[in-house]
Image (cartoon, rainbow, N blue to C red; front, top):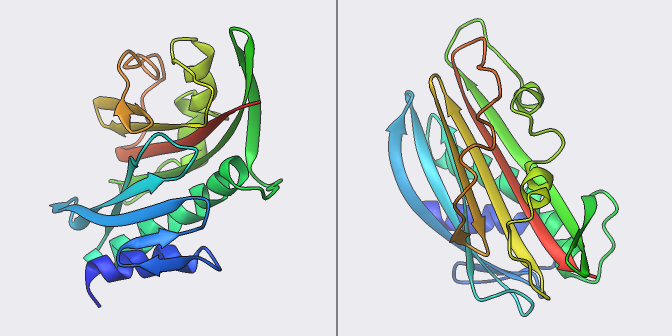
Length: 222
């Protein structure tokens, strides 16, 4: 099986009733185009980027989302990252964009101007330890980086994100290596600037490690 086929099949398995056409997994209310991005050696493993083109009638065109898997083989990296991404964020798509009621998905409400919005959100986090003694667990790293429960809440509370009268997709990634942090954020697939300081004041990790905190939030007008 090709790496691309493995990606598509892994995603499709998480959505019973979905149809598959070429590299697109169609949930009916939203379509997930699946592509393989860059594959490179990293930390003695294969860092494998997975790309998803998310489209739906309520969304603004195709929105590119991504996740990177780390594993000894490319196949393991694809299967693990695709499973984690679909398990974490699939229910968010259902809760925000379908007619289904998904009580298991976290939600908070915000007000911007005269409009109110429901925000459905979940996270897919990881920590790769560089020490044989281990280190933090993902939940501990989230607390230390002041991301608990949601970075999306902190971002939206700043009031600088332009919200519209349709569902919008907010993606947030915070990465940390010893001596370095990055913040990447997109709104409907477009890079958003001005949030480099989001975790700047958080204390450093006590052990050498790589942290990745990834959130997907869908903002739905009431």
